[in-house]
Image (cartoon, rainbow over all chains, first blue to last red; front, side):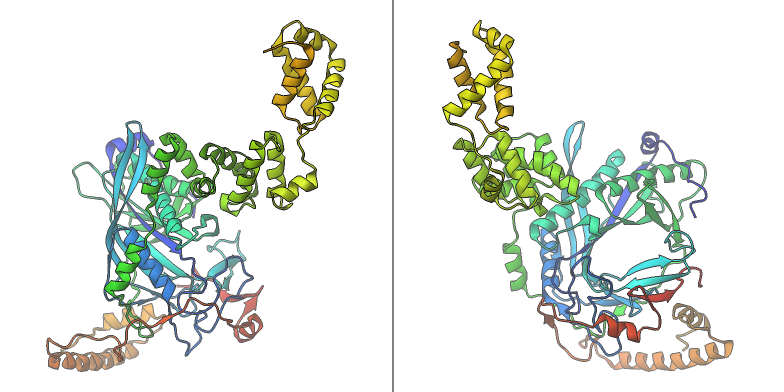
Amino acid sequence: MSAHADELMDYDQAVSLFEPVIGLETHVELGTNSKMFCSCPTEFGAEANTQICPVCVGLPGSMPVVNAVAVESTIRMGLALNCDIASWCRFARKNYFYPDMPKDYQISQYDEPLCTDGYLDVIVPTDDGPQVFRIEIERVHMEEDTGKLTHSGGDTGRIHGADYSLVDYNRAGIPLIEIVTKPIPGTGALAPVVARAYVAELRNLMRSLGVSDVRMEEGSLRCDVNVSLAKPGEPWGTRSETKNVNSLRSVERAVHSEIERQSALLTSGGRVVQETRHFHEDTGRSTSGRSKEQAEDYRYFPEPDLVPVAPSLEWIEQLRASLPEAPAAKRARLQESWGITDFEMQTLVNTDALDVIEETVAAGVEQSAARKWWMGEFARSAKEQGIELSQLRVRPADIVRVETLIREGALTDKMARQVFEGVLAGEGDVDSVIAQRGLVVVSDDASLLAAIDEALAAQPDVAEKIASGKVQAAGAIVGAVMKATQGQADAAKVRALLLEKLGVSE
Amino acid sequence: MSAITRADVEHLGRLARLNLTPEEIDNFAGQLDVILTSVARISEVAADDIPPTSHPIPVENVYREDVVRPGLLRADVAAGAPAWEDDRFRVPRILGEA
């Protein structure tokens, strides 16, 4: 199927000839304890087919019942996206033959979504400073996730050429919300960046609402990316739909490469086919999937096994009043309060460090120290382990403790690093790591002076230089003492003792 | 009045993965037509103040608490599956069947 590679046009040339119009459909798994229509657990990574029941494997006679928290989460998301909330809506059956749903239909919402007509503002950095794009939201609706297929036989585990498939229904029935944008024109060459920024902001929003932890690497957020091109002033062209784009970087790349592909096609006299395309993470390109020329017919009809959802005005208003601060407002507030630049704030956001740093500052640590630890040692450790900052073993309280000990002179910077190394490795909390590793600042004058004597004896030429007034040479001796004490001496104090001993001043 | 054509029945048959013979198509087109005509008659007598219903019981907002309860044991599920491999349902090849 990837036999011939599509022609691509140089991106700059493409966006000088055509105006891209993009659209995004984003599916996110909600973070509920149980599934959408049954009481099975939703834990990721469980053994295959251990989180299933008669409802989610579609046994005859089983009946679905709606998860109250899933409805509440969808309404909160809708409100945060400035949507209208339907006072009455129904679920619908989407009928299709594919073994990822054992019922042969998926319960979704069709012409009566729970939330409609909202918007989300995203900020994109440009050469002329930050630019705001208002992304209009068409709808937010509820549905259930599908099972997971593994294709066997044939070539390398792909559906094409597979002899048969294996199905795990643990994921079938996990609550999903689908967020659909209206077509987004007017982004020009920034289209890929705007698409990425939109998905990133959706993710921030869902995390701040606590409706989903949005672990993209576990597939809990998946995007379908629509792209069409038009010559300036002309009607929009035919769009393609690239399915299952599962990371922020891939969203950007999928839009980018689709603009290059369609431009090449259109300028060489071809036409864009309305089709589904598959995105390949390894190449950043997509290949043609099934054609949508014949519109699919899912025979949607109102789900007879469920009753309508009719949220009361009081409930909606109560949820609206309890929405947390919007991520954009929070960023602006913290940036001002911490006195950091746009760039520094963007780096914190990109590292997903904003929340943990805010928590740490709230616990009583200076913002500069909080940023130093989280963006330095901790970010490195999280990256090495392939986890998020919030999943590290270190807690804001640990940083409070370490910073206090540093201030009291009981820890040096170097020792603090060793303490956190222990905490991150699971050796215990700050005080037990200090006790186990014997991390004590050597501060009694006698032992420091003994170490200084040794260092001076080992480097008599340096000793002479210092004594003759070349104070800058003191560093070599201080370094030797720090080494001898395994970093457990207070460097400033060593320096002072050394200079005093040699009778010179700074 | 014929609401259902042979083409409609063929289309529905394809969607439902049914191999219909020409005789069956004629037969079902007639039968489905009777059903739709009967339903249409009900619509004629329903006044404007009677809204369409999709559910026989006028109930709204039936929800479940978000609480986990035990489901099925995998061994039991496996025992009922037509084909089972590596703790998963085994299903025939998906593409290329049509």
